[in-house]
Image (tube, rainbow over all chains, first blue to last red; front, side, top):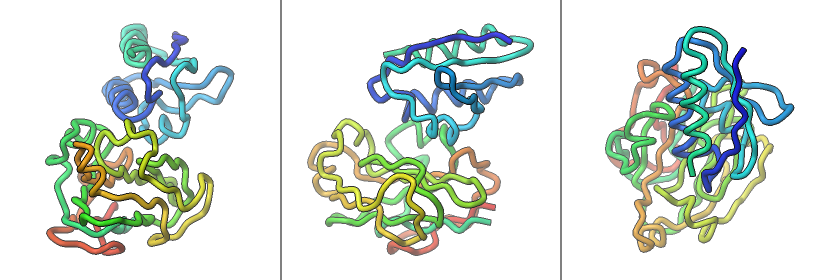
Length: 85
Length: 148
């Protein structure tokens, strides 16, 4: 299992456009990928409903995890989206 | 099957015509938008369920079947930081379709240089399962689309 810890930089947090881009990128992947708050329950990173429910605000840190072929590349892409200002 | 009701009156607009790629490209899901009447509006719940997220400019209601419907009040309205919106319920509340959620005024949104168009989105939905899209003039509480 590979993971990345990322601090969300967008002013709107992981909502709206950043959330949509994040989920769309995750949904294209064939591997399972989850996102969680620090020490929170992981939810599917492929579900916009789940990601919006996490309600991650600017400055909060999330953990993105994936397993399998291409997991590292996917996590790098997702981390870049989540950490973009 | 979920029947999603119009959260306000106005004119039905295809999501593809909404001036925000998050919605027009279907990034958060299929659905339909409403170009609202230009008068003070009380946005009502499009489905029965729990208010999972309540922001001034947008809210998500999750039905008992776990499906979420997003109503976004105008485009880029997060930038207004709640100015001009009044919350009429609370996050976590159980609500029935047609009950009031947020009051706002499309006229002032438009005056701020933003589009007041309101996407109503079947979150995580498959476009093949969203049918019966409304056309033309609609009133609050009218059927907006079916989510099979």
